[in-house]
Length: 126
Figure 1 (spheres, rainbow, N blue to C red):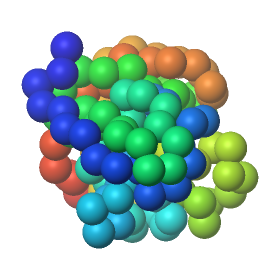
Figure 2: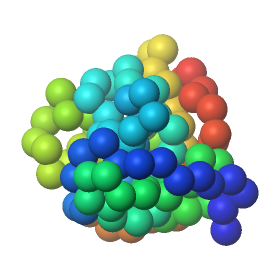
Figure 3: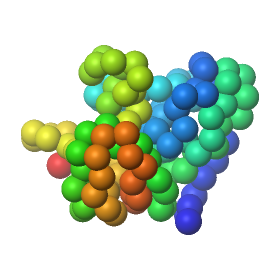
Figure 4: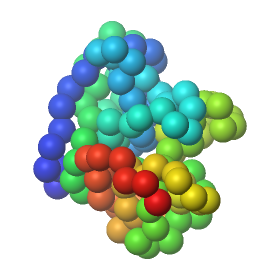
């Protein structure tokens, strides 16, 4: 159940990005470029460039895990600069100090599994 979602135009091809974290570049949806890129939520559909992408910005949703995730862990997104493009937008546990978290795992899961999450709606420093 989503508490709050909205639609934005995809600024790039997001057809392989469903259930992954996204950001806004101006008024267009994009994949996160760096670890510090502010996220707006999790993409609910798979739009091509120029199509409408629906984003859950706060509430319960499913997301693709980018690593092993344990229930109740705070999550952040893999960014383009972090590794392989096919992993961009997948959610991973926050590690280290002064890192931003955008979601909490509601269940455990392995890499590439869909897991239940709570999207925070705002970044929280952990």
